[in-house]
Length: 586
Ligand code: ARG
Image 1 (cartoon, rainbow, N blue to C red):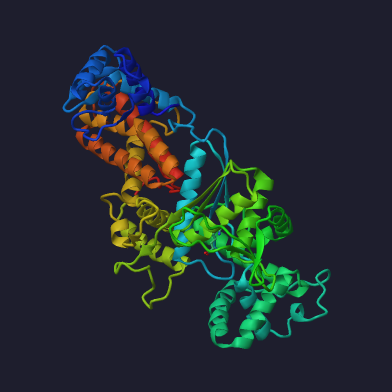
Image 2 (cartoon, helix red, strand yellow):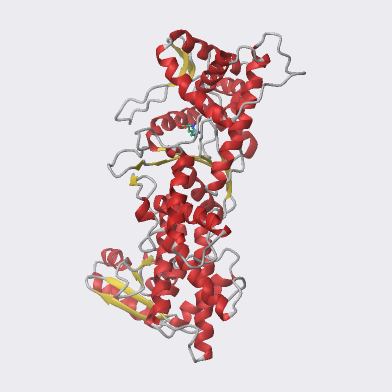
């Protein structure tokens, strides 16, 4: 179904037309001043300009027509030319019925079945995930779910960094430590043998060691580069260890992502694009854009309107090796061939924006991707500590994701211990859910492009715009419905409105469509967060002011319970779109 402002814009547009104005100027938005009215239209300003009259006069004419409509309780022209609109309670209830019976629960289907690939997560294999990867996973998952809630066919790909120098470093280090391993022997036979098993803890120690060493030990660094090149050209022994490293790493990555309720449709990596490189090179060559520069093969992407220089994209270095841009371009080709996507969105740290500008321009001007496919880099800011600098461990290093998750879960556990409802075996599971919800909401409530401060006490507060407050609100809804014997599923909607707090709650529910529209257009989950908070806080006021279970009038009681029911359905759906799991009680 359409958004409520979409439907109202059409109706108000018709009123403008009746008054002799262009119907397209009747756009309606949610009121800036909810204490005065529910919706507003500012179209009279344009109408007045076109007809050379006072805006207030134009607004008055339209308001008069609107007051004759049966869905409008009150339309008023106010200085200097706004039209304030309040809808009838009958309209609000009818809207609730439509939402309740809509298969998408009122989420506008703006995606129209288009195919989307979301590239997010981007963990590097053999290196543990760190907090920088946290935002990519959290925001990416939410962006993907928003797109699919809005009707796109969304495919998430983690695009692991599994093909670069870090693999060469780790393998070179392993070779040093285990010169006797069969996979390092020249007569290793991949048909008959496999690599020695590696465990995840030792793997996690290898990369920092190797990377540190390569900075001072030149021979080792050369060796690592050599291993990387050999691996990329299919060396049997190195390929076998690489596969073992991948097996162990992916298992570990899946564990962390599962804890975060982040699930990828595709577990491809940079290595998977390797087989597309020859075809990519053909396309680039045929386009006539591939040129030699200092022995390397590059594509120039500078444009006249650029205010700063944009360096050329290096496709092959002088030693013929591929780099980050090469794998990204080959991956674009792979995605085109596999899915013919209408759009590819990259949820990656905004500090990589130059890289994406280069890659996108190159893909466009060489025809790797048709112009009709949208390419977007959805950059995000940094999670900072209280000192305003990127979040670190107490010792000053980058904090690993699993350590951060343990910290948050531990703090949630402390909080929940005070609760009378949770105990024993469910405590751990609850602490994990509450902790993760707190962390995710604390992140997603900020517009993705902004930096924010990691403040665990604030995130875990029962009050304010927090994940905990939202989960707690759902548990209150659960408890009322349970006591009344109302099942959670099914279609129920309020049929009457008797108090202001109810009306406010209904408005917050019917405006969820607008939140999705903004989130979808802006590719920003914070709009969904704000909407969820608005519903939760409207529900709290409604709940405090009305004694639902003891209400003597059966019609009012039924309508209030139906409103609880619908509020719960919409709120849980919003949280699910943010990939936040709820709990039964707390
Ligand atoms: N692995 C990269 C990193 O850790 C992120 C990958 C982002 N995605 C992409 N298609 N380049 O920085």
